[in-house]
Length: 157
Image 1 (tube, rainbow, N blue to C red):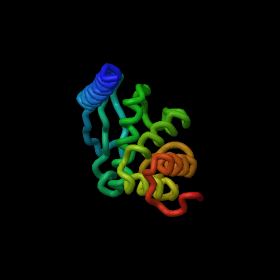
Image 2: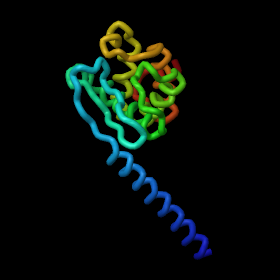
Image 3: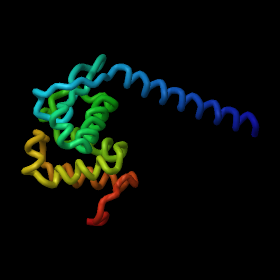
């Protein structure tokens, strides 16, 4: 019995060390830079060896919660080993996966802020967010609810 417990602890420790190492490695290969010329809150640039997150500080000052959400969204593309493409070049299914990751792993208020922005297409158009915004918003809400990361009203609807 002691041997089984020791083996289980060893496996758990190795998985934890591997996760921490992978996270540190991913973070060390990803930097963030500012560029006031991009029309997005955040986007990825680079390749599988070295990528960066580019944010527009002017747009992010106007919409800080959605900016943080879309930074997490870009991180999702990197962690999922998606090709680093301009935001409008991703298929809707890939964007949905990155949105879901961000909905599960962002601050809950940032999730709400991103959802509310996407539900207002006229306002969201300023940030060049691609795709069907209301569909994306509902996907974000569904993922956040499943992850117990939804603090908004109308959980069922």
